[in-house]
Image (cartoon, rainbow, N blue to C red; front, side, top):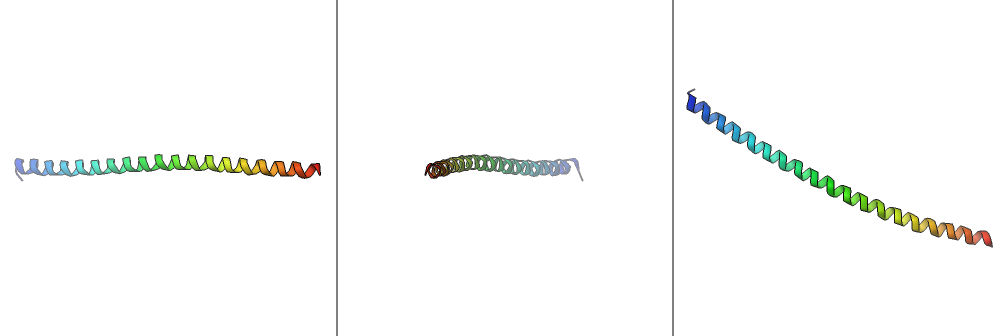
Length: 70
């Protein structure tokens, strides 16, 4: 193989590696965005569950207190 042929082959390999790196970087960015958004949703969900639990536990407490006075 001559020097120009080797050079052409190396350039092609480099381009291929560069494309792979870019696609992997894009995949990592997509995964990062997915997990960031998932964490936001889970945080909102947990806050809503906490509010729901507080509302019903206060109703249960007031109901118990009401029955104790009877």
